[in-house]
Amino acid sequence: MALASVIGVGTTHYGALQSTFAELVIEAAKQALDDAGLGPDDIDAFYLGNYAGDSFIDQNHLAAYAASVIGLKGVPSSRLEGACASGSLALRQGILAIQSGMYKRVLVVGAEKMTSQPTARVTEILAQASNREWEANIGMTFPSVFGLIAQRHMYRYGTTREQIASVAVKNHAHALLNPHAHLHKNITIEDVCGCTSMVADPLNRYDCSLISDGASAMVLCAPDLAKEYQTNVVDIIGSGQASGPFELFMNEELTSFSASRQASQEAYEMANVQPMDINFAEVHDCFTMAEIIATEDLGFFKPGEGGIAALEGRTSLRGDIPINPSGGLKAKGHPIGSTGVGQGVEVVYQLRGQAGQRQVKESSIGLTQNLGGSGGTCTVHIYKRR
Image 1: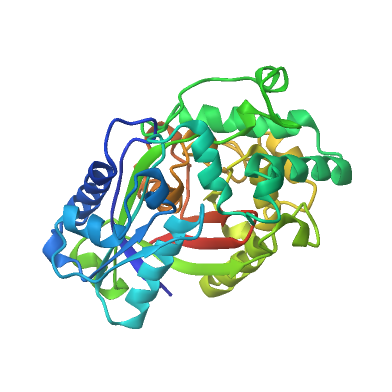
Image 2 (image 1 turned 90 degrees about the vertical axis):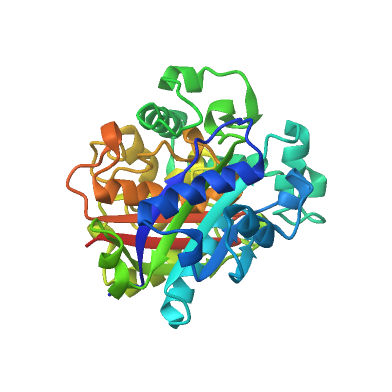
């Protein structure tokens, strides 16, 4: 049973852009509205995913601000924040709004303008998504978090540096086929393993996602109305959200995120599908190790086998279960508030058969997994071609 139908999508290029926050929002929203054949006056409610506009661009009251520049008049507008999962939280609120029956047509935008601040300041802003007193103030930034997680995974399961590196190589290769991606650069396992720009052992700069600007948008409607607007309908059939331990040290096991497991189980049960039914997925690869753990938490591979599968090519575009055909956060880019919506836009492109050279063959069901912080928040959505 469809929870909501996607009738319009749009996205800006992801990268270090000259565009302002407002210009990014306008561009993505206009694309999505045009795709749906709708105008601002047709929208009943608006949800914005944004992590830190107050810090990145010195602007708050962002939902009303974004609604104004889009041209939404009198429309109830809300901003959702959940660290890196902000965009998917906005999407989930849009789904719930449709499900409530209160609104028929909803616009969801995820947006972030990060490059307006220097790298050191960006790191400080991102660290606000962790426990400032107990972690960030003693140097536990997110590269440190995922470096420790990688070390533990390697110790517990024998995961190798080459297996972790293969995630970066694969996502760079996928991004080369994505015109919207931030980074178009072919790399090899030797490049990754031989890189001397260490960030947090064993992770180097090839293992880390990018500081990006960008916005993505989706128009949702009640499933029974979808054919009025779009002949190529994609339905959202499952939605899960869960909270996990906020601090890394509160996790019972460092090589798995309980929020990912719980959110995915909720989404699977709602959609009446199992991991084996998913044809491809966009997952949260803020660091290469995060993708490996996501594929295990989502049930695609057993614990400890995600790295093996990546090195064997099973998660590549022509593999058993293509992961991040867009290039992922690693190479497509990671404008924090936009990421969760951007993942959904990619899934819709794929299910419509509009993904060009990166098209996953014979796909009818796609999944997105969007993680916030050190696993404190996770959302999972499942999409199906009608």
